[in-house]
Length: 77
Image (cartoon, rainbow, N blue to C red; front, side):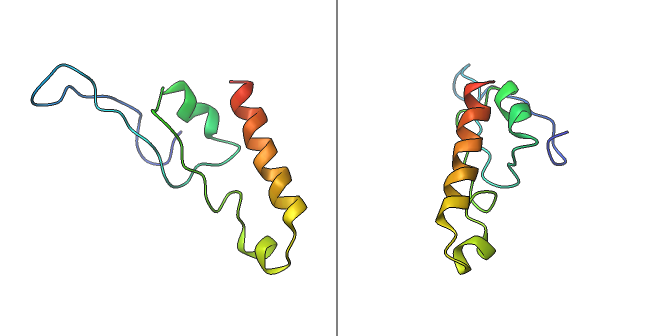
């Protein structure tokens, strides 16, 4: 389940287009598929890739590996 909220869309007050959502927190490799299935307009991933301990230790290869993992997960969705 995505955090505490179920994905949904609502018509706006002025036209019939659904509101588009872009999650910007709490996205992980484990739940990104649920967001993609909800047909979000985009996804912002931050600390799941740019982990403070990896930056502190200058482990750029690990950060690159996490980035690639997200790309592969998205391609497979």
